[in-house]
Length: 333
Ligand code: NAD
Ligand code: UDP
Image 1 (cartoon, rainbow, N blue to C red):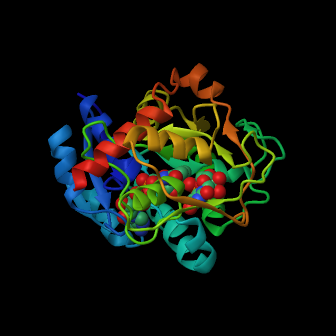
Image 2 (image 1 turned 45 degrees about the vertical axis):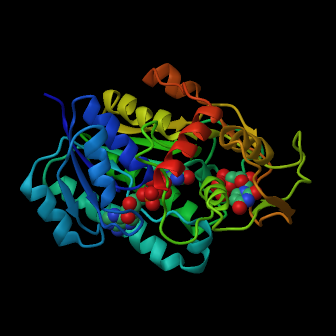
C-alpha cells in the first residue's frame, strides 16, 4: 500500500501533473486547492488519466480549515505546490504574496506538526539563487541575495523556515526542489498550463499568441551576450518535473535536503519560438522589444545532485514539450 499524500495546489499546473504520476505509481492522493489559479475541471481530467481523488477546496490561509483536513485523515507526506507565482504581480502586491505564500506555509507546517506528519516536499525555484554571477547553478551556491522580486523572496524565506523547522523537529524530513523553467503539457492533451488572468511566463504567452488572444509575442531584448542575443533558460518538461517529485518521495530523510530540477541545457527565447513553430506548423507573430527589468542573460541547472542522489534526470526534450502543448491547445478548441 502506497503512502497517503496531501498535494496542496494539486489542481494547478505542476500539481495536477504530479498528482497523475503519484496515482499511477500507487500512492493515495488527496488534493487541497483554493482554486484561485486553477479550475475544478482539472479534477475530472486527473480522473480520466489516472483516477478520481478526494478534493478539499480550502485556502491555506484559513488555519482552522487546514487543521480540519488533517483531522479527517492522516497523511504520510505533503507535497506543497500551493502559492501565488506571478513575479510582476508580486512587485505590485508584496504583502499579499508574503501573506499567502509564507502565511499559508506556516499554517500547513503547524497542522503537520499537530497531526504528526513529518514529511514535506516543497516547490522552490531557481530564483532563490538571485544573481550569483555564474550561469550554471549548483545547490552549494549561496541563496537569498539579489532576488529580484517579492515572489522569489517568499521562496527563499520558506526554505529558511523549513530549515528552522527541521532543527526544532529532528524527525522532520524536508525536500526542497528548485525548479528551473517548467513547460509542456500532459501527453494526453488533458492537462496543461491554464492560468487565470494575464500570464507573464514565456510559454503561457506563446499559447495566448497561438490562440490569437494576444497579437504578438514581445521578445524582451535581443542584445544579450548569448549566442543569438536572446535570454537563455533551462526549460524542463512538466512530466519530467513531476517525476522528480516521485524520486524525491523515495529519498525523504530527516533534515533539510535540496535539489535542482532542470535539464542542465539552456535554450534561447528564439529557440523556443522556433520549436513551437515547428510543432504547430504556423508562424508565431513576434517583435523584439526592450529588455525586461530584472532578467538575467542566461542561467541553467547543474542537475548532477538529483541524478546522483535521486536517480532522476530529464528524459523529454523541448520538442516533446511543444508537441504536447499543441495537443493541449487543440484539445481546448
Ligand atoms: P499554479 O498557479 O498553476 O498552481 C498553484 C496552485 O496553488 C493553484 O491551483 C492555486 O489555486 C493554488 N493556491 C494558491 N494559493 C493558495 C492557497 N492560499 N491555498 C490553497 N491553494 C492555493 O502554479 P504552478 O506553475 O503549478 O506552480 C506550483 C508551485 O511551483 C508554486 O509554488 C510555484 O511558485 C512553484 N514554481 C513554479 C514555477 C513555474 O514556472 N511554473 C517555477 C518555479 C517554482
Ligand atoms: N520572455 C519574453 N517575452 C515574454 C515573456 C518572457 O521574451 O513575453 C523571456 C524572458 O525575458 C526570459 C524567458 O522568456 O528570458 C523566460 O521568461 P519567464 O518569465 O517565463 O521565466 P524567468 O524569466 O522567470 O526565467
